[in-house]
Image (tube, rainbow, N blue to C red; front, side, top):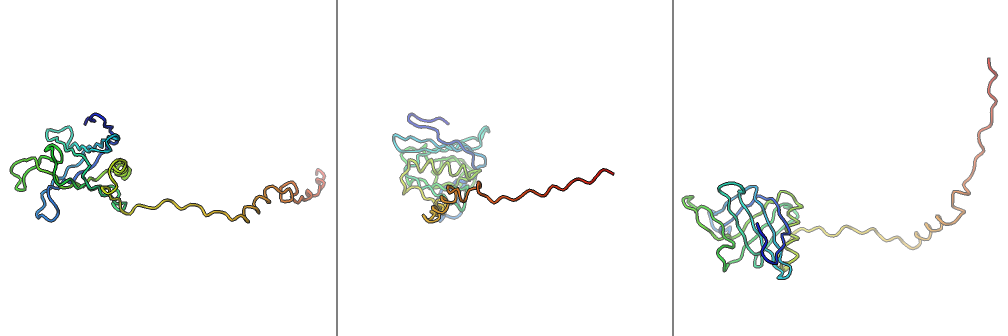
Length: 197
């Protein structure tokens, strides 16, 4: 996939994608699942926007792709589900090429270009999921990115009291405590060797 003017490709990742064409309240769910897809994240820092492109079934005659700007998208990630990122798309899009993906109708008879409601991206590693989420966080409004169960910063070592610091300095610098005045012991006595037999 190619970057557009002003964009930079900030991530090329692998994932399995579960596409949903309607909310979870609609039963049965109209959905599609693709394994081994390429996920591209493009960032336009000047415009503070990012765009996703996903290539499904690359290298096959069934290859297709999805793309969409993440401006009006809700991104959800939880550290308890380390490889999963959920995107909920915008209600409406002006460009019918965005947030649409061809798939069979619910009766599995004809293929149409349906609008996506949401997708679950199952990245192959947690590092990939975090790279994607952090790439979106750099430019998307904080209200559009929900990160759950994020661990706090690592604990800082407790500061040492000034009394302990002074005692350590004395022990290191005072010659009385140095190794130069370590107690010395007399060597073992010289015992003459027994006469040769």
